[in-house]
Image 1 (tube, rainbow, N blue to C red):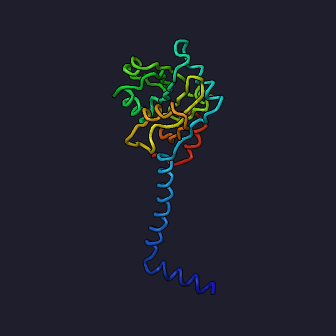
Image 2 (tube, rainbow, N blue to C red):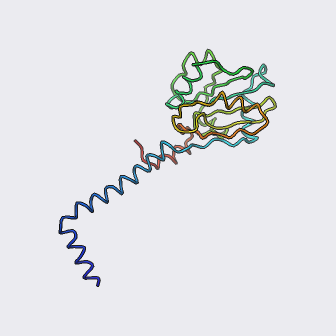
Length: 203
C-alpha cells in the first residue's frame, strides 16, 4: 500500500502538478508572513493599569499651582506617526476648560514649537516612562483632583481611527461611572515591548 501511495504521488508530480504544489507552499508562507505583518501594525499595545503606581507618577507631574485640578497627560513619541497625528489634533481646536494638560514628549526630535506654546511639554526618556508602566504611545491619562487615575488608554477605537476621542474621554472622566479604556495603537517605546514586537515580520 505504501508503494502504491508513493507511486501515485510521483505520478501526480510527473503530470505537471509540481507547479501547483510550489504555488500552494508559497501561498502558505505568504499567508503566515501577512498574518505577522497585520498583527504587528494592528495589534493593540499595552496601557498601564489605573494603579497606585501610575497615580503616584502622575502626581509628580503637578506643579504647585495645578494642585487640586483635573490633569490630562498626553504621552507622545516624536518618531511615531500616530503621535504626530495627535499633535495635529491637539493644535487644531479648542481644548476642554478646567483641565491642566501636560505633554510627555519622548524621542530625539524636538516637539512642534506651537505645542510648547499651548501645552506644558516635558521631555522624558523612554526608560523613565517604562518605570511608570508606560511602554507605548500615543497614550492619554486622566487624573481627578484627588489624584485618582480615571482613564489610561488610547485615543481611537482602531488603528488610524477617524475620531480622536480625547475630548469625550476627558468629559466622561469627570462623571461617576468608570470610563472604558480604548486600545493604544501606535509605537512601542520600551526596550521590552520593542523586543517582543521585533519577533514579528517588519515592513
